[in-house]
Length: 95
Image 1 (cartoon, rainbow, N blue to C red):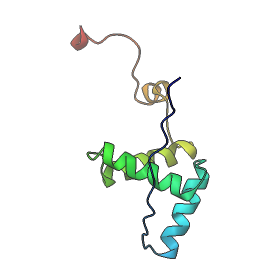
Image 2: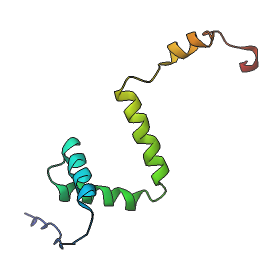
Image 3: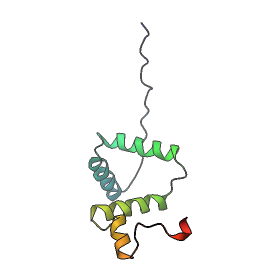
Image 4: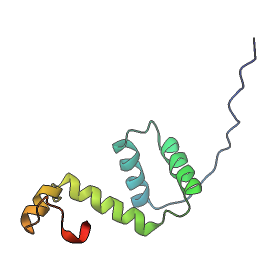
């Protein structure tokens, strides 16, 4: 029987941040169901390393969209088509 590998050793890293920022971090990890602040921070850093092309503007746009969805400020495609007088028929330019 093969011996199970032990998890990699972890090192403690200290970071400094304002109390206000820490409160935001704590509210976020709890809201998204992480088990701890450390677990959340590791996940955020892992995502940043795996997806360096994902920038702050993308994050802000995504968060704004999420807020609009939660507040019911979005429209489905049928609502948009009705508002602009579009129908399901194929237009001649699409043929």
